[in-house]
Length: 111
Length: 113
Image (cartoon, rainbow over all chains, first blue to last red; front, top):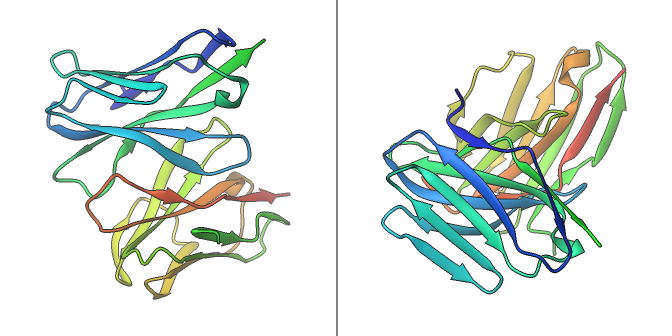
């Protein structure tokens, strides 16, 4: 299996909450990231969490980390059409130069 | 002011041609990267330079040659282009070589006919 797995698609109604899930395999991951890619653009770092944290909140974004299950989630409250994008989960260990990216989850927000 | 800028944004060319993509960052970062994103949005690291020194060189055909004239620039030259090279190529930079906080350019879409 892949090192970082995400479901490919998520569809939500505008105003609802979105929850994008990610699982990873490397128990020595020290940092976990969420990136956002809007159509025709590069990836943009949204938020990240250290592996010794359970939760991080930043305005409408909430990141939850279950280290035991190696599960990371990104919750977007009050989802707007502007949140439609591909969201990439990534993990990094201390020993690697670069993060390992998942394949991305396409979030589709409909009225 | 664009932090990581790539040129050209679009490139359409014939098989067998040679082409280059240029990247510049004005963030003062030490480390730069080239990623390839395929049609299914999968991101694959190709190369990374730290202070002009090559530190990552993944399994990439040797038709691909990166060049870093200084730490603010990382160019990608591709010889003898093939159909399978069609993709979006992203340049990125980071403050150092051991961080997952990457700053991406807008991408260069290469189409090989």
